[in-house]
Image 1: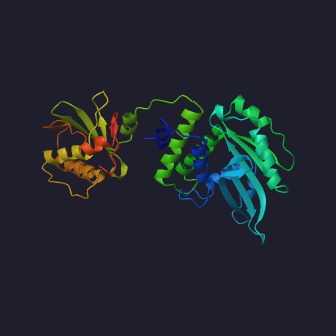
Image 2: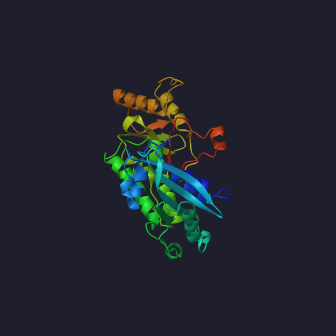
Image 3: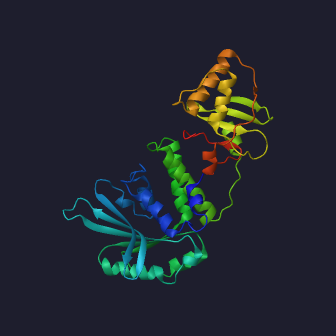
Length: 327
């Protein structure tokens, strides 16, 4: 599931404020994502402000929707000299975020710059226009005349997704500290959302079942009485998934119900109430190996269905089911 795609449906569409919020969240060193300054420093380097990537000398204040007269800056980054006694402000970065052409307003970027300079006359300002690489956005960006020591930068969403993919790659290659799984999945979902919904890039139809099957360390073919066919797939750390072999989209099933059917088939008793799908999958594989059980395993029952509660929540699978512990 992609949370960004889900939230973009209907009246609750993802807008510039939403994408700005997540973008700013990733930049804030003290947020719960665990990235610390990793994304922020990569962004500063992209903006040619690498001199501020010094944890000992500088502190950062990141604000959403900073208001100046009749204009609002989507994201403002204030950089302070942390060694000075009065915590001196030494750099302002103002980011104007655009994800829809209809949101482009003539001279908006210019007015924002003028308002910021009224407030920060003697502070260097970096005006950043965050948008897809498109002539409509570039024209608005180029309309701003800026004066030294201030600078303006066009930051494309293409470049932002590249920064995020770079973080994921470096984590995978052990170049940076390990990231929590939830953060990696959220970053992937955000990149996919930006590519498909903002940049309108064509997306690939991935056969998830085949993708997962290729990495499974154990496979158990299952045939139900109604001739529906599945595979129990066991991965590293005893993670379990169910692959649908019927060639059509399944109405879905609760994975634990299928594993219980196998327990019953082998007279393994009832699993402990605290057992997860990982526990059950490990026990089933162990039983099959120890008893040299013939495969495929035939279950004298119809395939398990969703429980009413799960159906009510709108649960469904296509050709593979996610076996989270909530089952």
